[in-house]
Length: 407
Image 1 (cartoon, rainbow, N blue to C red):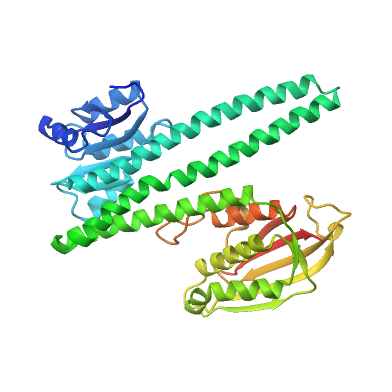
Image 2: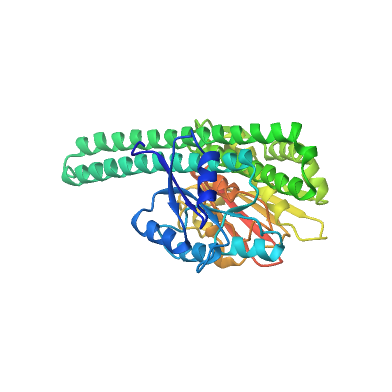
């Protein structure tokens, strides 16, 4: 077995079950580590923490799978290792909830479907492999940045040398951004394989499944679609970093007209009324600004109040940097101030910065769908425009996004 083989920890008190899992997942380059009990699994994990996934039986003597998973999640180094429960008894909502509460990412009911188990394990092992590659590149980039920073400090008195090293740093950062984009793009390949298997089952075997089996299979399809949405959002975020900055003067009315046509069905579903009041043109990267407005309107739709028609008001006006009260902006520069206001559920003002972070969500996925990247893309687009964006909100009274673009 190669030293770099992806390792899988399989936990079951029955030897035949351990052997069965290895047979199903054989010939895929995995290295299997067996644990015959929860305590045995914890002892192994204390010594070795580079497992791609843990496949664990629930019903084991002395310490069951739930207890073992809870102890694993208490370790900072182990809490991100995905756990899939394999059990014959996870047939009630309370039991399923307990499984997820203890730290599992998924579960499978015995007897196991080899194709589905192979597909699920393949997704997590491929993600593990890509994360390892990303971590190595990040370590290389960090080491390189440290060298550059040290060199800059030593050559602080030599302006020409500092400029040279700053250019090198910029080049390396661009390479790192390009690598992030390529890596995110490559993540789609294992997902395509999962969807291929799923489509084969859907076409040939779906009608043979029980109602419960159809429900579980539908959950697999839902999970793969969510992963594709996440990858597409990551790619959009990368493109927002790598894009050519070609500015053009545009009429904001034209931008909003295009966005309303693109989101027509979504707007109708929420009985949305968009009111605009624009003054003069604005100099922007056109397709990026369309994306910015689409993301803000999508955000307003997603967090609209139940049974309340959604109202969105978008206004623009010219303002001096000194009058914005924003320390990030130049007092000597004039800005186009665009305010985007909705009457949605709003948010606590203490979270006004958090909402722009990648993967940052103020609400659980069961309440509001989404990848947590939409507003991060909005902020990145504003950085590309050398502008600024902030948010003001109040629970059940809506939110206002203030956008400032240099004139």
